[in-house]
Amino acid sequence: MEDGEDYEIKDIQFGFRRFRAPAKRIYANRNVFLLDIPPNPIACWLLFWMPQLVSSWLQRLLPKWFLPTTVILKERNPSKADNYENEIDTYLHLRPLQGTHIPCLFGEVAVSYAKRMYQISQRPTPAILLEYIKGVSLSNLPTEELESPHLLGELKDMYNLLTKNGVVHGDPRLHNFLRVNNRIVPIDFEFSYPLPSDITNEDELETLKGEIEKRVRQAKGVKLERLVSGPVIVNGLRVRKPSGTATHNEQRGDEGPGSSAT
Image 1 (tube, rainbow, N blue to C red):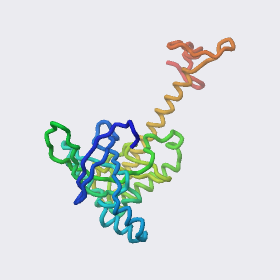
Image 2: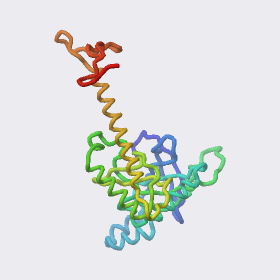
Image 3: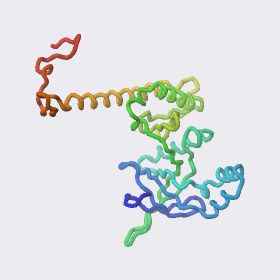
């Protein structure tokens, strides 16, 4: 993490491994953090000298000792404990997709805040460590990419994969999906549930498409508003239209060709 960024120091207990790491909160109202893992010298040495096949096997067998340098830490919300357990169950059910189509679940940990003077000791908080995916949230995609037919195809592929594995994502909002190398990676499985064998994810796909269309309309509305309220030419001079001043067409009540004013 860069100097000057706000972060908390957390004590992490992951199986037999215990370490302290800085954590930066990602969302203001959620206990989700970007966690910087201190390097493990022995693990680094083994990964350097061992063949790729052996090192990959060790990473899967002992994830706690071979964590990436940056991971996602997601703490359990005491008021939403069922959602926490549900997300873990969904990741375990989708284990074959981890690392390729969804983030890896490295495991469950116990989190304590670094002790401060006069601080009363508290019970550790259960949390999960997830793979940090370097992608772009659909909520941050440019309008032209949201309108691209390629994006729709990627969404269909993603939902077909979830249908094949019998899972409904359960929370089809734009920020719960990342675009990574021309594919869609779903995240946040807190509201997921099993999909009946005779049903597809078509309804949820349509809901997400509706969210995309709504975002595109909003973006175009903001762009149009900026154009209308932008600079105008008066007597050859470029000036900005005063706030609350109507254009000639606005004064006439014109709404464009083919329109009818009521």
